[in-house]
Length: 494
Ligand SMILES: *[C@@H]1O[C@H](CO)[C@@H](O)[C@H](O)[C@H]1NC(C)=O
Ligand SMILES: *[C@@H]1O[C@H](CO)[C@@H](O)[C@H](O)[C@H]1NC(C)=O
Ligand SMILES: [Zn+2]
Image 1 (spheres, rainbow, N blue to C red):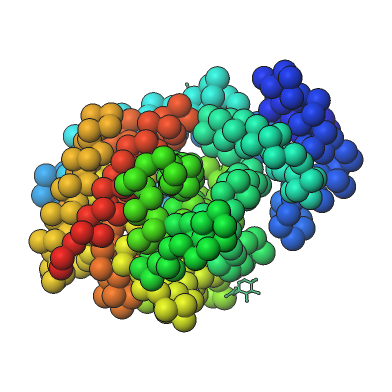
Image 2: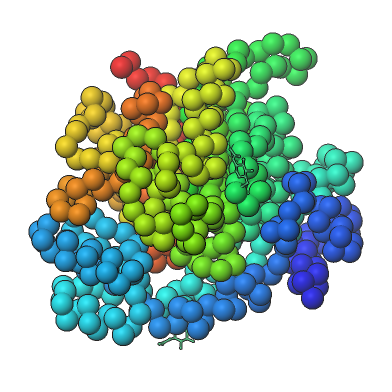
């Protein structure tokens, strides 16, 4: 049954290509389900089944799960009101989507909505039916499909022209929907095969469920067509990580898109060529691989990774609270914000730490840029996240760059992103709002010059359920911002 679904998917992929249909589909293996596993180039893993998630996973069980849930924005005017809202949510273990000094967005059951509004009247309904918003976030209002994984053994013997055609088509389909992890990995591998002189795909580590954390390392062309030494190895690195929080799906295609554009425009755009000749870029589009898989099969609003905790039956560490600076080690393992019992306990955080602190220095490289890409709320944030009592020495420079980034982004589609320090100036329970954040560690310990957290679309209308048709517009504005970021760093005199 699973096979027939997948076959349909393949047919769907191949259908528009009438001339090359037979030709290419031979290379997308049509074989038995055993062959399907073989088509994965990653080590085989029982969690890696390819399914049409629309009929067997999240979408199927979601109607009953989320149909009586809403997302409400509660406004607060002073720290006391903020505390009231947050305490109410915490006492009832509600899912806080976003919080700022002015409002808090909460996902909750209709029944609780009434009670909460009676206590905190100042509110606005963001999502009146979570179930409906979830189906609407998929193309055609329900299609939770992924592209099939590619068989790279078969592809290696494919004629160049057919391979290029496949690449173009896979790319075009890729950004029409939120893809599963197998399709994302296939896409990244396809990209690295297509532009093998500009990038390599590497594994940065393994998650607790045994999946590889993939990084795409992009750089200038190091030799010319005659194999002559051309560009010297870049010694400065810009790192981008996405999906540290599992439910922030939009960060994944957005990073894939930027990686794609950088390699695809290397030969046609001087600005891009200069940026790739100057820096090595490392893209990690899916840092929280296990968490992401879980949001596609079980719980769309899962945040943490899926690691077991010694002291608890609850699973998962919040990757962005697990870095070794401003780490508190407090909290309940059942809580979404739980940052682990020790810094770098999460395999994913450790993998990134290892990249920045061990791997790159050993190669004689320094990380100068670091973008941690999240959603939502459309903002550009800089250190510190763990406290508002300290201004970083580079505060003014951060501000200048952040302002330029948001302006550049605005030019593309007219979207406004805000910019500020990552901490949120509350008192009471939220004094140290964000312990163990990636940007704080990168800046203070890792000595990364330009660390930012970027929170992508939107402003709360869809929140984490951003419709798939916004993938391309979100990606395009992020890419424009990214080019500005690279250029600014390359020209910065301080
Ligand atoms: C929410 O939407 C789902 C799917 O469209 C529907 O089945 C359900 O009845 C809706 N719930 C309410 C309370 O309207
Ligand atoms: C990650 O998780 C696996 C499985 O639990 C474990 O074997 C491995 O040692 C962990 N740590 C790292 C750094 O990969
Ligand atoms: Zn996040």
